[in-house]
Image 1 (cartoon, one colour):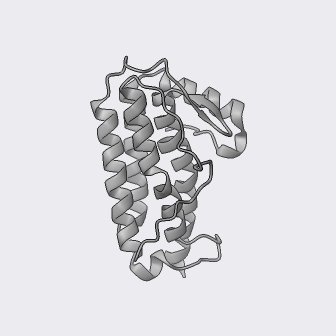
Image 2 (cartoon, rainbow, N blue to C red):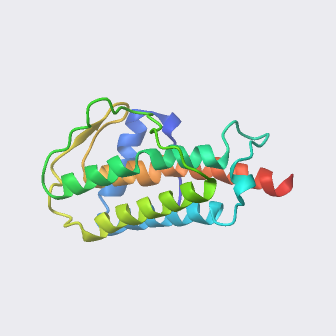
Length: 179
């Protein structure tokens, strides 16, 4: 897949990377999002409830915490993508800002894993059904990384951001398997 920009590389690098990926079109972005989703699901697929809730020496976050963080914005992301792909502008709801973890408490790691899988299936469904020419001129602002159109949001949220967490989950799962 080559180098995927890291969040730590900053706004200009992220804007440049997202622009380079989106310029390759919807099928390319859909492939990136789908591959990263499969990587996440593959990492967490066979974790037990106990493993999902275990803090390892490599990270202060458990697999549960990573997945809760990634799941927290799925509804907003789906709504953003649905809105922008329909040709309507999107505004963040009042009181919702960057880094918000969401207030959903999941009864178990299994429940959280299912919610993530279902939420990503909906997002991939929106992307599969999108007309690549509709709403592409509309942007919505990311507080830290600037404006993205819907294809950019899909790339940023479900590839760039996800890719950082794939590395984190990989380290956590490796630590669980070697302990």
